[in-house]
Image (tube, rainbow, N blue to C red; front, side, top):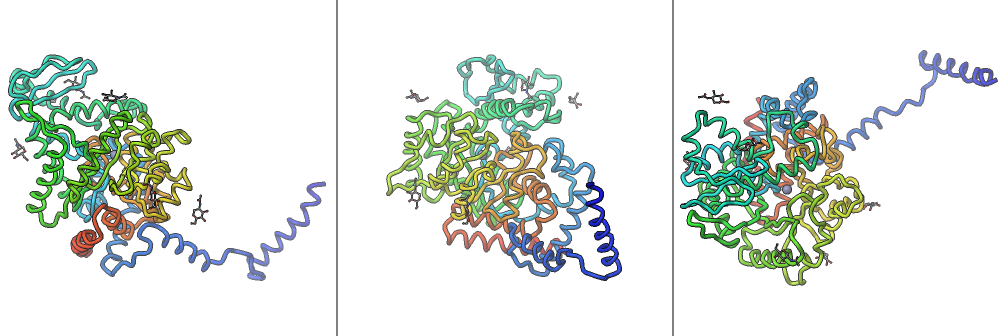
Length: 506
Ligand SMILES: *[C@@H]1O[C@H](CO)[C@@H](O)[C@H](O)[C@H]1NC(C)=O
Ligand SMILES: *[C@@H]1O[C@H](CO)[C@@H](O)[C@H](O)[C@H]1NC(C)=O
Ligand SMILES: *[C@@H]1O[C@H](CO)[C@@H](O)[C@H](O)[C@H]1NC(C)=O
Ligand SMILES: *[C@@H]1O[C@H](CO)[C@@H](O)[C@H](O)[C@H]1NC(C)=O
Ligand SMILES: *[C@@H]1O[C@H](CO)[C@@H](O)[C@H](O)[C@H]1NC(C)=O
Ligand SMILES: *[C@@H]1O[C@H](CO)[C@@H](O)[C@H](O)[C@H]1NC(C)=O
Ligand SMILES: [Zn+2]
C-alpha cells in the first residue's frame, strides 16, 4: 500500500530531475547572490568586521590567510592541544612570529607576581646573597631574604642559606630545575596526568604562589621584578599595562616592612622610570586586588583602604577587584554591603566574574552581580554565553570581557581552544580584549601566545587582520585611561601599527 502511494511521487521526482538536468525548469536552489550577501553580512558582524583596511593591510591580510590555512592543515594543529605540549610548536609558527612583532596595545588582565618568566627568578633572584629556603611537608618551597637566620616556619624544614646549599651540591642544575618547577605550573611531563582535575591544578597554583611570595616581596627584588616585567611585555610589543596587584607588605633585609601606599608609590616611580627609558611605552596603572577568601569585616576595611588609595593616587590607581578561585571563594553577592559605596565616593570595579563552569550556582551569578555593581570590565567572563541577560547588558554598556585563553585551558575550563566560548562572542563583535592573566605560571610570556590561541584557535579561518587590529584598539578603548589619554595612546599605537604593516608586506 505504502509503495503504491509513493510511486507517483517517485515518478514526478524523476521527471523533475530530468527537466532540471535538461534545463527545462528551474529548481528552487537558494539564490547564490542572496547567499553571498548573507555570508558578507555575517563577516561584517565579527570583531573588526566594520574596519576598512588600506592596500598594505589587505596584502598582509591575504598573506595571513594563506599562513593560517597551512597552519590549520597541520596534523599537530597547536590549538587542539594543551598549551604545555603545544608551546614548542607555536614557537616555530610563522603566524606566531608575526604576532610577536604586532603592536598589541595594552594588556588589561595581568597579575602582579606572574609577569616575569621563572628562569629570571631562579637565575637572577635566588643567586642574590642572604636568600634562605625551606621545604614544606607538601614538598613545596618557601623563601626569605634576611640578614640573620629567620624564625622557623611551621610545616617547613629548617631554613638553609641557598649559597651554602649550592656549594654542597654536585650538580646545581638539578637544584635550580627543582626550584623552577616549584615556581610555575608549566611542566614537560604530561599535563593531563600531572593536573587531572580543577582541584589539583588550583591547589598547585596556590602553592606556587606561596613559593614565589618571599622572593618577590623583598624590596630590592620587588622593584627589579616589576621593571623586568614591564620589559618582557614591552619586548612583546605591548605598550600599556593594567596590573592587578595585591599591594602586599614589602620587606627589607632587616625585617622592617612597607605599607600599601609605599608599594603603590613604588609602582608609580618604576613605571615613570621605565617610560623615560622607553618613550614608545605608554605606561601602566594598578588595579588593587584582595583575595576573595577574606571575611566581610576584612573586606569592609580593604574597600575603605582602596577608596583612600584611589583618592591619593588617582593617576596610577585604576580601581579594585577580588582574586582567587571563584568556585572556592565567596560570591560577590556575599560582599554586597562591603562593596556598596556612598554616592560621592568613586572606586571603579574590575571584577573577575564567570571564570567557572558551575552553571546555576551562586558563583555563577557573579557575572550578573558584577554588572549590577557597575563593573568597568569583566575578568574572563568565560560563562557569559550562558547568561543572555548579562550578555545583553555587557554589550549595551560596553563592559568588555578580558579573555585569557591559555589561563582557561590550563585551569581546565576548556581543552580544545577551537571550542572556547569567546569564539561565538568574537563573531558578533562582543566588547572584548585578549590578555594573559598569569603568563609566567603557564609558561607563556607577554601577550603573543594568547593572541595566537585567539586568532588561530577560536578565531578559525574567519578572523582576519581586521580582527587583530580591532582587538588591539579595543585594549585602549576599554582601558581605564581618560579620553584624552586614550587619544594619545591610540596615536602612538597607530604609528607603530602602520610601521608593522609596511615592514611585513613585500
Ligand atoms: C639581575 O637583575 C638585575 C636587575 O635587572 C640586574 O641589574 C643584574 O645584573 C642581574 N644579575 C644577574 C646575575 O643576572
Ligand atoms: C647536571 O644535571 C643535568 C640535568 O640532570 C645534566 O643535563 C647536566 O649534564 C649535569 N651537569 C653536570 C656538570 O654533571
Ligand atoms: C619543589 O622543590 C622540592 C624541593 O627541592 C622538590 O622535591 C620538588 O620536586 C619540587 N617540585 C616541583 C614541582 O618541581
Ligand atoms: C575576619 O578575619 C580577620 C583576619 O583573618 C580576623 O582577625 C577576624 O577575627 C575575622 N572576623 C570575623 C567576624 O570572623
Ligand atoms: C550603577 O549605575 C547606575 C546608573 O548610573 C546607577 O543608577 C546605580 O545606582 C549604580 N549601581 C551601583 C551599585 O553603584
Ligand atoms: C537583548 O537585547 C535585544 C535588543 O536590545 C532584545 O531584543 C533581546 O530580547 C534581549 N535579550 C535578552 C535575553 O535580554
Ligand atoms: Zn585573573
